[in-house]
Amino acid sequence: MWDWNSQLRLGKSSALVKTHLRRLPLTETALEADFFLDATASNRGGERWIGMVVEKDFGGLLAMEDARFEPPTANDLAMLLAHAMLQPLNGGSRQRPRTVYLRDRPQWHELLPHLRQLGMAVVLTDDLPEFGEAAAAWIQHRTARRSLTTEQIHTALCRPFPERRTTCVEDDHVRY
Image (tube, rainbow, N blue to C red; front, side):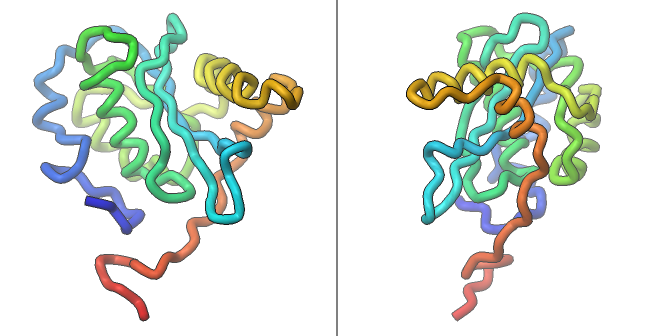
């Protein structure tokens, strides 16, 4: 079901079901996760925000997906992290990381207590080096004709998210 609300929703209808994730083995793995704006795929109809989860030690990509709505919410991050733990893209085993590194954004604060309840330490930081490298490589691959420097990409990754625009559907009520 599409989540039209920006408030965090957990439970059976969400990707982040704590009872399922608690069953996964807790490992010494550390992850970096965040979202970035794909300017090449954005147009007047909307923006494309892409989320990535990357292993901190090896830089392996564990999950990558688009945000449902713009800009990303805690629900988008919860779904992204759940997919990285339950269905890692690298074909590795299902696991809970010991530590999750997130960019210090106000949007993520609602999710932090839930990650801690799952036994994961959460580190808020302004610098996510492995995430930045993976995002820069992806952006440079997409914009092969345009030459963006790695520094320009890293600067764009650290920008705050824009305010969320209201939609015609809010809080399960339709406005006419």
